[in-house]
Length: 70
Image 1 (spheres, rainbow, N blue to C red):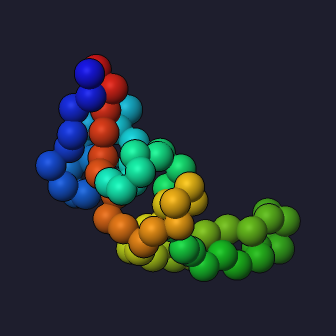
Image 2: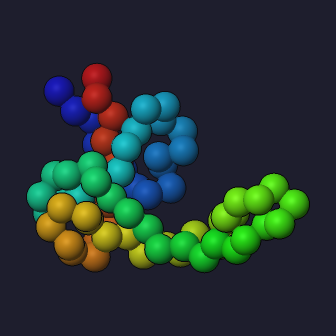
């Protein structure tokens, strides 16, 4: 049985919660972000993660439903 987390902000207080697509149920959710090359560490580092989410399975832009398996 799964428990839904009420809002996107509530996910931080639920250990093990994962974002899922409200349309198809997939947990293959992605976000856009900006990365920059850091020569000191020799790797790409995240600068900004944007709010928009997209399901990589069905391709829909959406607000994820956060779920925790019980």
